[in-house]
Image (cartoon, rainbow, N blue to C red; front, side, top):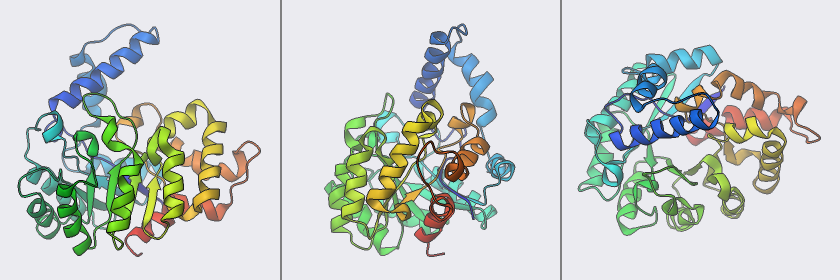
Amino acid sequence: MIIDAHCHVWNWEILPDAYWNELCDIFIDYIKRSGMGDMTRQQVKQGMLEGLMDTDGSKLIASLDNAGVDKAFIMALDWGYGIGEAKRTIDEINKFYGSIAKRYPDRVVAFAGVDPRREGAVEILDRAVNDYGCRGLKYHPAAGFYPDSPESYLVLTKAQELDLPLLSHTGPISKPLYSKYTQPVYLDAVVTDFPKLKVIAAHMGFCWWHELVNLIAAKATTFSADFCGLQILAKKDYGAFCRMMRQAIDEATPYKFLWGTDNPVLELVFPIKDWLKMIQDLPENAPGITFTRKEVDALLGGNAAGIFGS
């Protein structure tokens, strides 16, 4: 089974305007530096982002089908306290994500987004699980909180009680979000103080990957990482990506890393089908580095399935 262990479903109402504007500016800057002319934010939204919008999960399923992916873990985002509220409330956003999982129960697992600083954060998580059908908790500390803060511990206590895995963003991120809250070390106490909580560090920490891998190796029983978002590095320098993954596997075993896409946005620069094939072909194509088929199968779905005991 192939599982995308970290992706999203987007529409204009579930993320703040500040994020959409910054994302547009990133594309505008890239287009300009590449000598391809200039665009306005509105042109980027209409010409590039509009096609990624998905109001019911049908585009997600079509993308999975096209790439040959069996299941996806979809992550709701709660950025409201950090960069301004979305047009929908966080309860509505979590309900939307849960509705997709209910519509496609064999294909989708929804993770609720909760900022632990919100009033009633514990109750927000409880509703997301018991009323809306979410089965995991998504943290995005880049909104401005530390995952080992007292407010967070109240939410994590409920997550552990409900037997939910936590997926928490790690690694630098664009404006208007804050990178300083996303260093892997802030998950250290979480993993220690919640021994039954399965914790997944997103993006393998990006530039902090070696720090994260060492933490995972030291606390191997409940700590893992996805490597979604690394397709940019993999496309730019395939050899460096292969060396990184080999070292990570050698230090923490192949059973601690989960493949994902962070889509829909990266579909624009590296289609999911190509990213999947790159990982599938590691045993044949990695330059001077050995990957086994068993390792690749674990990365592409076995480890993610184990998060939910299947």
